[in-house]
Length: 414
Image (cartoon, rainbow, N blue to C red; front, side):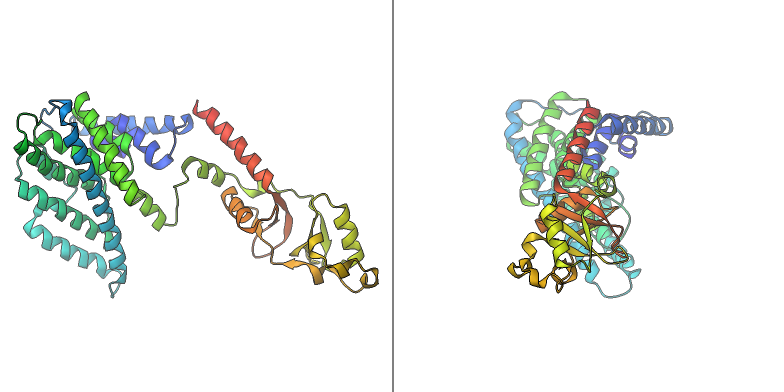
């Protein structure tokens, strides 16, 4: 809704949420997102009027012979996007190492930002005014190039020092400055073929923003909704694809993915990981697992293991707390000597500290525990504090639950 309202682009706003946040397309998510996007756009248009986010003059692509130049801009955009993201990451790491109280870091960042703004006031704010100037060819090539570097630096300082703000519109501004400078160079080299710096400004906006945000589809649609120009949108698509390939090849993640990783969240698995995280162990636990007390003698252990369907016993203390596990492989040759039947008990031969899950772990956690331990059956306890044994979870139950959820989700999408 915010993207739709900010850029007067309801279609792109709806797709942005799916592409970046949800990570897949499904009707259960599509309907509320579209409603939010439409409502956001209506409110924005009632208040501001039906005007585009940027003041864009008529720009169009003269010829498809310009595509080699567009490819070059796509490569340059990918490189600049990487520099932007790397700069933000590095600045945040450096700011964490700056000595002094936490409250002083935003003040220090503000001082640095103010120093930059004394020379380049265009870096302040989200950059709408400077972007409009670039779109309308009112900035020199030297200033355009300088603003690419200064906006990257200013935004990185803001993010690193703890100021509020994002990277969406700064990425658009950086792309506009890059595209404008690139367009001036292309026009000077081949004035009869070039569509003019304005067209390259728009292409640069889309290409840099798409790589930074990890949203090639919705970024392309934003440009189309702003320009309503099919040939120019095709050029944007080409540059966007190339910039994303360059960014993914050398960095491997968008800025949003990096921020989520820093916060301890990982969306790289996307749709499949979300499914695994949505299912809890307590829904699948088998509560009829074979158990013995910690004092059970060797003869009882042999009998139960030989009759066991799973070949594994879970050893419990008197209070129901999990002590360990026993399999036939855990019994030495001496354990089959009846002379020691009354000398060895379960506590003597059990493997203590087995891999465990609690009732509210999700299947992503369960899958990792199964993979790392190599066990087929994993003990499930009430929680890690009480260690009260509840039952077991088998690897086939994890895969079965995942497959059922996957089928249901795919059915929902269609």
